[in-house]
Length: 180
Image 1: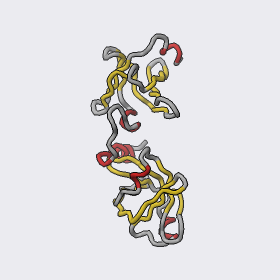
Image 2: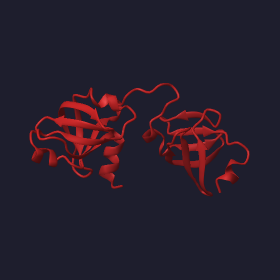
Image 3: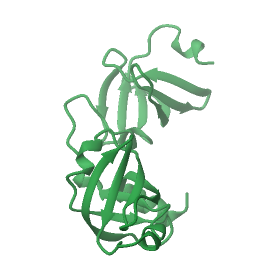
Image 4: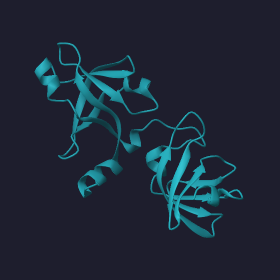
């Protein structure tokens, strides 16, 4: 990732990516990237970003959910050709405007890059990815000995401090060997 993109990704979170025009009046269909899709319908503005240039704040006339996608109508987009100009742009919000989470819940973007310490004494590595599925999320941790997968569960992750970029874990017997 180049430096400007990395900087923008730390400042904002991507909620959706515009896929195509929807209708004839400038609306666009977008792929949803948030766990809170209903919140998209309540936004009055968002940043639109192409991944290269400076993002721009844009007013949202309306947004509704349709067939697992968000349909946005942005201010200044009044035709199919206007909507085509928006294809590929990311719909973003500043990090501080994200939906609040309940205790024990974390944003994936806040977990990636955290140092992982085994009971505060030994640095295991850093979180490279968070694998989401139907069950408990799993932290993919890069260590000097290879990847270790640790469930993001209270019995294994004793303390998660995303502000300090630190996670303390207690690995169950045999987990290191299982992950090799």
